[in-house]
Length: 100
Image 1 (tube, helix red, strand yellow):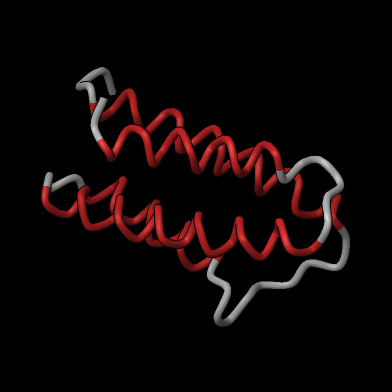
Image 2 (cartoon, rainbow, N blue to C red; image 1 turned 90 degrees about the horizontal axis):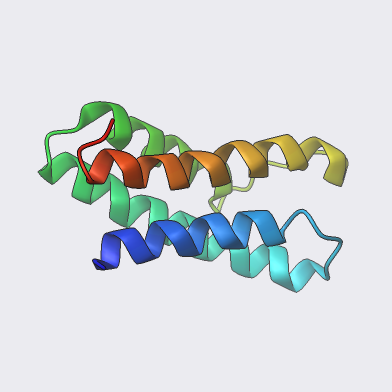
């Protein structure tokens, strides 16, 4: 398994765990980790000349960035965002294998 695949699995797991009510420290850690993973995968997608996935990973890095965070008022507003990006990170692995 490549580092790219493992990083996408890790991001998806972190995003799905974020659906549980946890201390704020977890969400800060998750933002940092998902941003780093998304930035790395955007770079990898650029190298693969895959512009659609590159743009997706750039958007993910922007949404979860801890430096200029996007604030939503309630956790329930973040839940669909976390689910969408978690599923998309998993789907992006299919593309890496040439299935999408």
